[in-house]
Length: 203
Image (cartoon, rainbow, N blue to C red):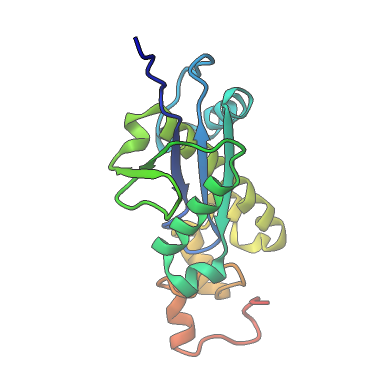
């Protein structure tokens, strides 16, 4: 009797499509069926502390994992959807193990050399995509904390670039900095109205 070989499935997800500032990150994960990880879930429903714990376990127990990102400049040049797909492709291409198939959270798949299928709410339905969502989220949050050291007046370590009242107030008062996405409202409005001047710390 012929033995059927299980396909190597890679979960893929992104973090950071919605913020007004910072790069978009993506992660690709191939879990090891022999080393289960309890508690995997959509990163959005987990606390930061729990995401941190799970991220360590994923990196220790997965057969392969990688993180990719697209820069603010790439987001503004090719749009956030295409930049997200670019970050996903970079993550997949960085894997040390070639998957047979990608399971991608959402409606769109990156261009890759293997089969790929988009799964709506996949990060809540499949552990392999949940794992990718956790790594993408923790990687991006860590990067925003690093960027906070460069631009501390915006509070990136707290809101991670999302359009919170605090962030919008600082944006209105200070204007955009170099890591704000110029193609996103309300950042774009500063440039369209010629409100950019020497007091705005873009560099």
